[in-house]
Length: 289
Image (cartoon, rainbow, N blue to C red; front, top):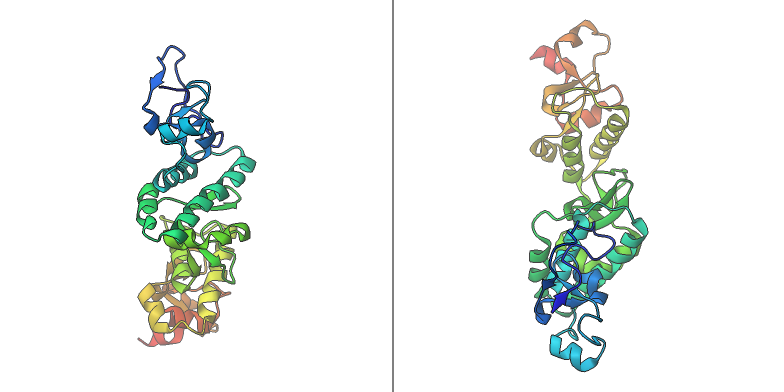
């Protein structure tokens, strides 16, 4: 039969591909196509057929004969989600309406049969930013950067909280890797991502975030100094550049101004107790060593 729409062209959330008007109609077996009403679930990978192209596709016998009475497979729905996440989006309203429909299918499948998780993950592919967060310019985020409960530090656009209206799809979100809450390693990871490759000082907003993260790590009673050493935490120095804490000293001898010239000193807003916990050395002890 003639496919009225090619894969990747049909749902308005996905950017349409340009098609030469002289191209011949594409033919597809009924079992490999879907009616146009299923475009929201499969247009990225499946040819679509308008009802007029094959008679009355609404007729139950015809749908059954073509295999269209069965729902779209969850692996196909997962590939649709991956395509939507990778696309450029201009219609935020349509996107916000589509994602819960896709999530609903995938979540229901996992609740009904946990074995379907493998097919869903295969459809999404490795590294797919499958979690819709709609945070400013960031539409989708990797599951590892999302948690159901955010921490005490606002970490966007690096870490995100599951939007409240999507938390009901918990089975799907947990299956792709969304965690309950963030931990110290996540904060340490954001600090590493903030670090400039050239070692230059951070911009003001990034520096503010880095200082908040350092404070959160230093104040976390569950985090030991030994764990901080294992994570190799970075923190801002006096100039606002991120350095490994093991290379920094905290100023516990402010009367020795000249002595500081030979060391990289932590940012003045970082408490000495926090700096010590994260791996920085005492200036006084460094002078004695």
